[in-house]
Length: 479
Image 1 (cartoon, helix red, strand yellow):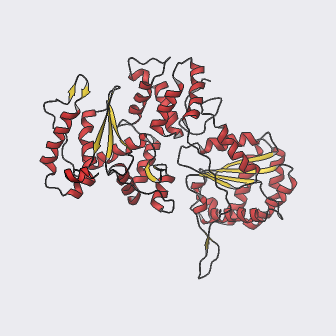
Image 2 (cartoon, rainbow, N blue to C red):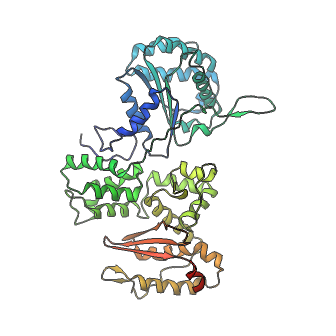
Image 3 (tube, helix red, strand yellow):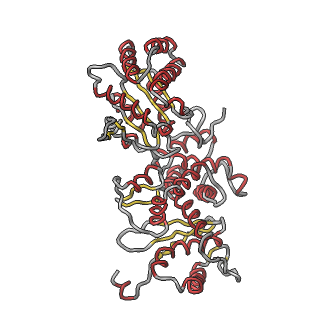
């Protein structure tokens, strides 16, 4: 089977072109060897299932007995009561053991044959782990499917209790939970009286500080593997840097940029040379990925999260469109939610959109929403003087934009202009670029209250437009 770039589900080294993540695996293995319980909470399509699968395979030949579970597709019936959950979990656990260890699976079934509640399950796990010579490591994927269920949190509380008693009571060596949300932040009701006590069911978890994004050196390993297999020439360092520039190392986006070139560019670009990748190919893939009428489940999920949370929408708009500086603070629930979903990230103690692909998608999305609500028609170029020799004539465009603002927004107050002006400008440019270029916000160093908009057209033209409210000559000279 020929290898390909994978953007759906788990990646397998024998089927897919992959980044070398051995360094990340080694960091996770150290936590397991130390007997830690921990959570891998990262945004969707960020490599969680892949790293669990590779950890499972790394553990198998050693002294460990790994068990890989997933709560994806598990119905609500499982969580109706302890009487339904405890035996169902035992069957799920045994079924996974049966794949490679049928004899051990039989032992577990015997140990858990009479479980009726979590207390029985806890005792049975202790009996079973005493009989097994290997250390048992449990890897649980898709915990978000169950994390809002009180019974599941009680189950985590049981594992937490066993972890705290591990010196006196046999239990699993390590438990790894993977999902979008951090289970440590969930709350478990531990007393049913008038004074409700709340406590985290997973506050024993060690910090998982492994950077799951790909740096340029890691991206290069995938490019080298692909080039060797397909006999393709490229400047590996430059290509890896450009991919990272657009994606900030987001695993899904890194693979998607490459997949576009490998599978789609030939049909879209007449001069494409499949045996020689260039920076123009990476630029094309970025444009192709961010074209307005294209979407993926990854983009759909991002927009859904913005649509479903007004506070998050307002924060992302303030950062990406209005150019406001917002301090990065994990204790701020809205900031934390944006980071959890992978829409935002922290840079130099400030919140920014996590990568240029998302920045472009968000700009397109917000421009479209604004255009369908209150903005005027931006298509006023009747003489089409905005193009000359295939390049945007930016001075002409800016002059036209001034006329447009005077005609349509002269009666608006300064607060509106400052808040909406950038979005109006980007909406104004959108029909001119018309799929042949793109725009994104470039961070500005220092205390200048301005936003730089990078505008590209075709494969050669790149301009930077500084957007700043004019408050008079004296104010400008003072900085």
